[in-house]
Figure (cartoon, rainbow, N blue to C red):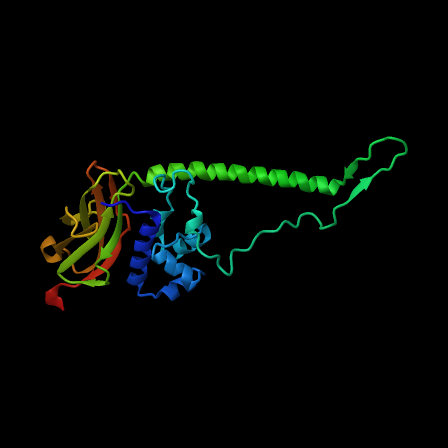
Length: 277
């Protein structure tokens, strides 16, 4: 499978999630407080969002955005997880407000100078208020440096944890109602270059009366039908599913035994047998 950069991964996710919700590009741009131009450049893989915009996209679309928030050492080996200058989008009209420190009263900078007769040196004397301000700046700078170090270490730990599992995203069924035959489909892929290839995808099902710790495997997809899409079909009547509410999900396995159980959680549908329609 060809390696995808963060911009290309984000393009797939934004296009898929927007179309799945039946939204226009302008509607999504308004929802995340971005200009239409910037959003179109994200969805065309021309630029990558700045951290503030990326958080807004995550709040709107959910956990599917987490995949592109992980540090990728192959894509930016020297620059870390920051966006390169050529990838920056145009600044938004309303960036998040800055915090202001009002602890100390505002007053003009003042220094006193003693004039002495003879050859004595003239040295400025800094006011106590200015000294307190300088100490506060040094303390704030030290806290920022410490936070940055903790963030970098945390991102490294998170990267190792997240990329140890194969990735997946739900495709179908998308409606709320199903009949006897149900067509499953989902994306399944290695999370980073060099990870093991996908071995198979289990589509699972659960209904009232079945042990919730032992979900039933409805069908297994072992080869992608195209572009990392795995699909198979199951007959709910043959599986013995009871009419009413059922839960469906999928699990991804790679060729080294790593697995990601229900990467997109559970989906609820209403099963109505064909003879009951």
